[in-house]
Amino acid sequence: MGAAFVGAKLALFLGDHLAVILRDDRPDIPWPGRLDLPGGGRDGDENPQDCVLRETREELGLALDSSQLRWGQRFSGRLGPVWFFAAHLEAARVNEVVFGDEGQGWRLMPPAAYLADPLAIPHFQDRLRLYLASRM
Image 1 (cartoon, helix red, strand yellow):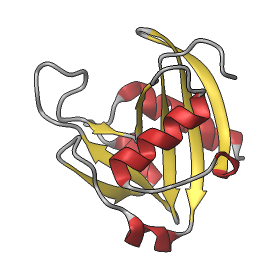
Image 2 (cartoon, helix red, strand yellow):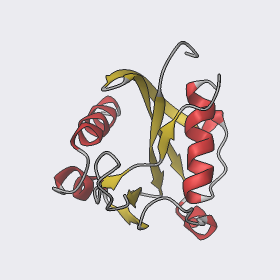
Image 3 (cartoon, helix red, strand yellow):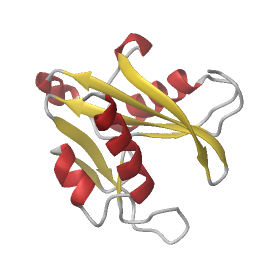
Image 4 (cartoon, one colour):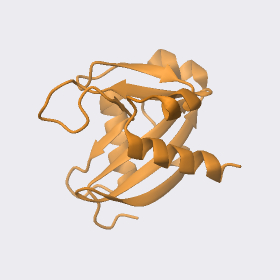
């Protein structure tokens, strides 16, 4: 799983809701002003799990370990291979969230609301649908 990749994202459920980040609204970043999920680019030679766990800690202040990642799949991204993971935490962990310095804010959304929202990033909607279908 540690082969070359450029980044990783996480569908992070706190209870029944998805943690979603509103991206900064700047023209120099991809998907400005859109609804994103925790995650980002690879640092050094970290593996996909370490990447997504570090990014989640930086962006939402939540510490998870790799055993809490329920699902993961590799995809082809615009800049190279990427990973998409899913994790489920207790709803009470929302009290531990400390929003980082990237993005305009964060919120919890029912997964169906994220999947229907026109501001959600389309390929993350597709990956979330794939994950949810795998649970059936």
